[in-house]
Length: 169
Image (cartoon, rainbow, N blue to C red):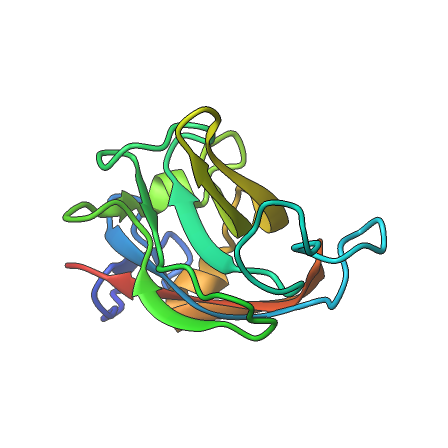
């Protein structure tokens, strides 16, 4: 049986469309809803702690194709939104000018990391620091790629996190 499949999908053995493992994708961070306190019950940005603003988080969203490696070739991030419990970014977070293979996104042994952090600023002495708010680790579900988006509830200190996936045939 021959099936006609949308871009970034192929006809599977069963005759149904499935994600083509060689398809290429861009990852966008849509929005999040962040809890009002850190896991230990404190403020995200305690006053007097060196941060220049209030007690709410300063969230950003980041995708690292290799967890822990942050450079333009392997990571992408949204802008940081100051003092915001409900950030809306709708920004590309896969590395600029690059796409990610579906086989990598759906691989349980892959090393990528998608996370929301609270930007704690940068200093000349210590560099930049951030506290993790929530994380998505491999694998992504094929259904997320088929629908082009997913929203996760109650992960880490995110009440919700919405991600958009765009096929680049």
